[in-house]
Length: 368
Ligand code: NAD
Ligand code: GLY
Image 1: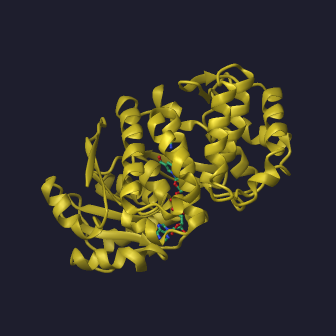
Image 2: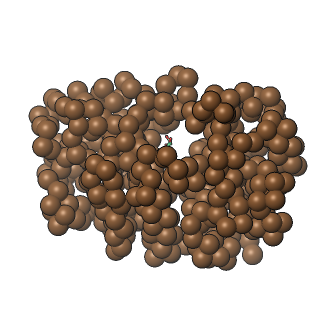
């Protein structure tokens, strides 16, 4: 088991990473002086797998199980969580536990933030993406019809417990999507991890649990360092948007139906790498390196039918937009170049370039 500390203006907290940690939650919380959990919230997929047994172990009522899916990441579900907490007598000093992927932990964190003007919560991420990204850094929220995560706030959990043993039940496509964020973290902050990925990506689905632990720990360290320095995304945290400006546009252009978030980030990384190379920020060797890492995450749903105009339209509505447009995070030889203003022509060129990769990216990689 490894523990990584995260600093926050509200509360410093630990991210504990290891195998079979869910059953140890009571002692992990008690050791850190955290109030015993008063309620468990999960979803209809993860509840039966992990949430119910956890609630039993904590001697609590069965968990509230929200419907599963990004389309349910809405204010009405947050309201439902709050009413349920009230019905179960959860008071101000209590702690609520969210067990699930990033959709669930974002919603439970947001519910904890607004319930009785804010109660404590513990995040138990059960997807790779939630372990390496969503559960760390205190961003919580829900979607609005106009776009993703438009309602929300910073409300860090008191504790994050990433039990890598839960990855065993995660569908392979979700695992591959989460790997896109692993590649992003490695590129931003731990090239050593990228070298390991180069060696192992082809058969990462068969990685032993200890290697998952190492990868999750590596990514959490990168994210913890960044958000501890810049919690509110005034500067350095913007690096975590690598691959996301184009990625979000691809997701929105396909109405969140075709691509998982991580798959959109994979395409975003590929496109943003093209822009960075044209600008001289990324060498040909590093472009190749980044592309190779993404190639092992195939098959990716294609995006070459999405026109540049549609992508540009969605970029124009990106919530990162300021008076000058969008400050992109582009991959560079030594990590990330922040604050780049990218022209429509550069986006068009990048899209034309990655469209050529479409058929190959839709295929499974050959095993080495
Ligand atoms: P998700 O929460 O939808 O989970 C993916 C699927 O896997 C779901 O069907 C889920 O029920 C299922 N699942 C979860 N754990 C499982 C397990 N162990 N075994 C079997 N099935 C399991 O998707 P995600 O990729 O985890 O998260 C995406 C969300 O995270 C998005 O809403 C995104 O906005 C958010 N996010 C937030 C942050 C942040 O900083 N707060 C960062 C990145 C992403
Ligand atoms: N996933 C981006 C962030 O947490 O800032």
